[in-house]
Image (cartoon, rainbow, N blue to C red):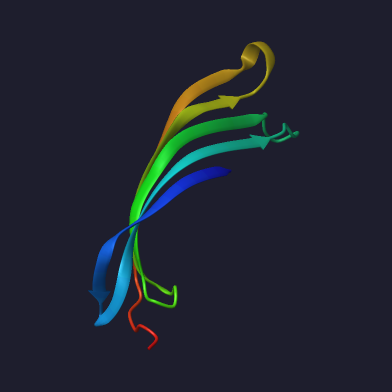
Length: 105
């Protein structure tokens, strides 16, 4: 997994009454997985590229108060080797939302 990101402070807000800075992130993703062949299964390899974007809120001490992010990755999955090799397209999308329920004061 390779993650290369940029982060920018976009403003300030409050979460559950706690003051915080809003930080925007844009992260390029590159994931390669390899599983060699065994007696039970053929070799498997995938390579996915994509981007994750999100916003997080941090209190003045750097404690994360909330985060929302979403990402999408696409690429090829290859099963087997040689003439019996098969290749297919794969797409993964995810979204994650976190909120600290009881901020530490």
